[in-house]
Length: 279
Image (cartoon, rainbow, N blue to C red; front, side, top):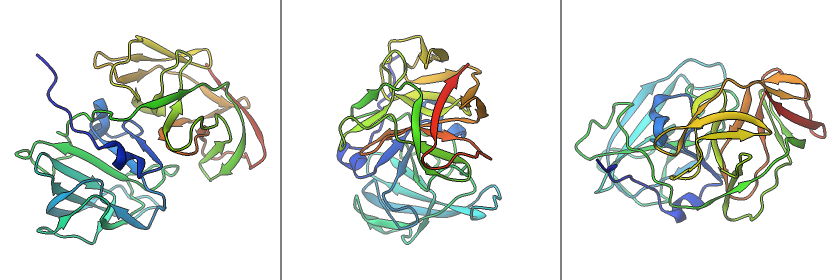
């Protein structure tokens, strides 16, 4: 039986956000690439709608209590005429009956309790059939990927250019062509998506990966599922300068790349040189 038609966001919509991912989340709603996380240019500001259509419902959603986040989230459901779009992590300024266009402000992004402390504000988007339950967390369809994502090789080395309490960002690998999307690549040249290995499963930024296993920095990191886009991570140890860290945050970036290392309680600072290794 052939796979059902998969929804997608147009290349122009994706290019309006500096980063996106399908798998960089611990929640089942992202399994098999069934949701997109879109990272706006200015977190905490107006959240531009990634879809056009009629708002059919908004709902307040309880989320896990976190000291750095609000204790409730929001769901906005938009009927696009083809799908129901479910959008999370936006405190809405719209209501049922409103019509929105692509780029219209839905509200403001919120720092949700669904986020890990290293996760930036973003919009979560999922699509499902118009006759489906619009509020269930599961049931969205896998996203098709309408843009090419350039795979960028990396040797595991870089210098810290950004440091937060739970993460650092390196100056490498650099983006090969700002204005297009690129992602850190496996040793085989496949662009990776997800949280390696802290969010399992992960994925790839292609819909037809031919490899059965994938490696990074000389270590086998995962096995590709039959859908050719989902990756089951191996149990790998990630170390920065010999010290255990939680993992790598992987995404497609439009203008600036750089490896994002998830490392709570780290002692790294801007200007420090880092060598990442995997075992």
